[in-house]
Image (cartoon, rainbow, N blue to C red; front, side, top):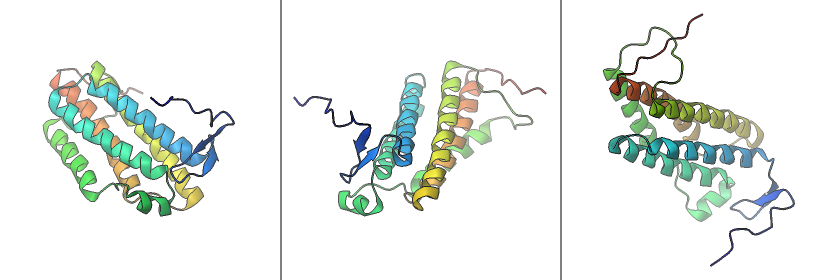
Length: 182
C-alpha cells in the first residue's frame, strides 16, 4: 500500500495535474482548495437531510469534484486527461430545483438570517462557502484570463440553490424564518 505522504510539498509547493509545481499560495490552488472545502461542507449537509435531498447533493459533490479537477489543470491538460466539464444541463438542474423550492415557499419580503434547523444552517454554510469559491474563481479568471466552461454560472446558481434549500428545509420542518431587523 502506498504511503499517503510524499514529502514533495514540504518546500511549500504542490503538483498540478499537468505535473507543473506551484506554490501552495497560488490562486489556482487556493481556488480549488476552497472548492474542496465546499465539497466537505456539502458532505456534512448530506448527513442530515432526507434521501432525496442527499442523492441530489451527492450529484453536486461529483460536479464539484469535476470542477476541482478542471481547476487543477491548465486548458491544454484538460483535453489530454479527458476531464468532464460542467454542462448547461448541470446548471438547468439547479435552476429546476430552485424553481421547485420557490413555488412551495412563501414569498420573501425581507432579508432572512441564516439558521433555523441544523440542516438549514448547514445549507447556509454551503451557500456562503460557495460564494467564497465564486470570488476566488473571479480572481483566478482575472489572473489567467480563463476558467472552465460554465463554471461561474454553475457556482453562481449553486449558491442560490443552497439558499432556497435552506429555506425549504426550514419550511418542511415548520421552522420560522427569522427576518433581519434594522
